[in-house]
Length: 75
View 1 (cartoon, helix red, strand yellow):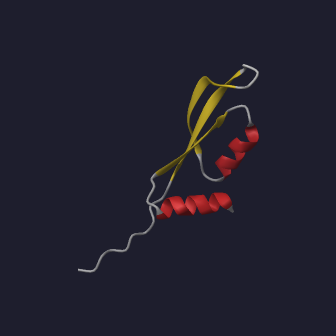
View 2: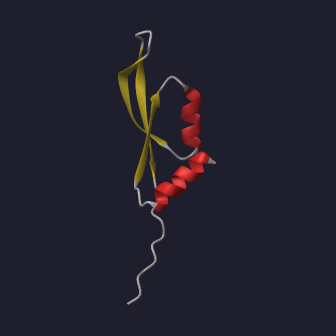
View 3: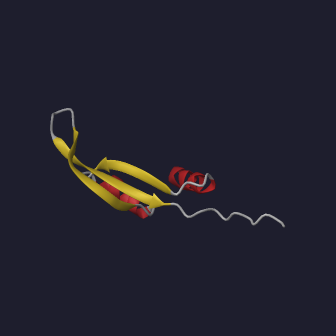
């Protein structure tokens, strides 16, 4: 429900694109964002370092927002 509200708000605000960033080795968040319509935009190798000093790839996913219908102003 929260994700739907955010996508609706983005559309009404006139945003064109939403980005989500996450480490690429956690499959569950990736599945969730794919279900919402996000697609992989880029992967950056070894960009995130965890508290143990291990590096992880950074995955950037994008959702292209469909513009809200804007009524034509009267003439």
